[in-house]
Length: 498
Ligand code: NAI
Ligand code: MG
Image 1: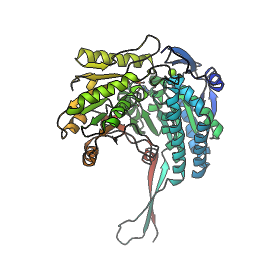
Image 2: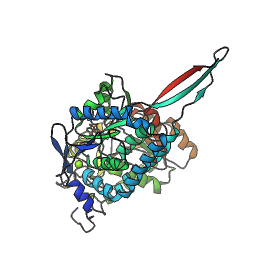
Image 3: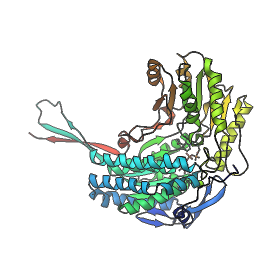
Image 4: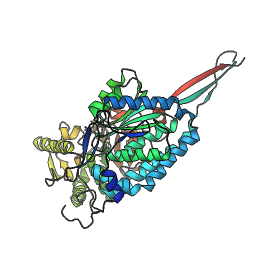
């Protein structure tokens, strides 16, 4: 981690942005928290303070919700679908224009390699807005033939925006999660209060400036920085919020549901996972092995869909485990702003402690680390890519989401029974299957209780492809046209015509 010849020079615009006195976006203005308080965002590669941002809380959420309500009932209504689409398209162009800047901000605030942010997070965010721009003009109802004796009625449905949407996002893909949330809500005509993660507030604040530049009316998009227990909880419970969309832990997802009960606001949730990745002996191991490594090590394992339970058919178990271990060993850890870095630090000291806690519990319960197994260095929040074997179903490392670069490798002998083990989890977000047998592949796709099944690939995302969870991995879907359901109400109109 010492060598720094490939260190990227921080762009002057990024340096300028980060060192600025940060404000949040409420009612079309960049403002301080009502309390005047701020909190720090850290650079996870060093543990040093990166920036101070406003500590928004209940009062700021109240102001933001009022502004969003006024915009929903006023200025935003006057925008035609085409005009909404054009604004969304404009955001995608602005993100692309500032792509290098966003990649650096994301790397500095979150820890991820700048090169990865530049080819994944940033273009995916731009593309999501572009995809949703197209939907703005296609939110259609139906005409419905009624079976009332004698007839004489004409019936149709309208699809209307649900109203003010509260949105709460995590820190693992800060800009992309903001895009996944804002894009569909704005496409259908909702107004938004977005509460960003306290660990990674900066890219959304830069996006807020571009939203202003794009020309959205005041109050349509409000971006509040603050903590979950204060700002987030106030948003989830707010009586004037019509819909809450949340991405984060299953534990907090349950709190969101309770908070939403007060006014029965609509709820969509994208929560945790413990996704199975199944390698059959007839798979092309040359792609399955790097595929399985990517499934867990991408974004340092900080993915809700991480392939964290690796089931491998007995005959090839040793070969696959060795192969994944070899891949893990070769991953170069370092600061995200180093172009040679393949894996950066975890996002925070809390996540470092959490992941190391799981590694310790795995050790105590008898799991064996083929590679990795702990923290790397004492500066920054680095954890070594880890492959665990001898993992038993009653262990915490088998059952619970670790959210770090830690995979549990488990052998199976009966290919007809592996789906039972794979489905033995409270989660159901994603799954992977590696085989050359097309029948087996589709049969597994049918049997796995997960919102996404990747066959001979993993971590493939597209704005058009719905993403979300079965079981305790969530409610509703993000992306695709399915997400539009989260933000619309259907109105049935029935007209007597004779
Ligand atoms: P978290 O669920 O606490 O945080 C996610 C978001 O929810 C943040 O914006 C936070 O401020 C907000 N929040 C927290 N408490 C809240 C409350 N009571 N009311 C309203 N909003 C609240 O997740 P955290 O603590 O950052 O990470 C803990 C674990 O959660 C991770 O180890 C991982 O297992 C899981 N996680 C899952 C994610 C996913 O993509 N599904 C993303 C982040 C974390
Ligand atoms: Mg940070």
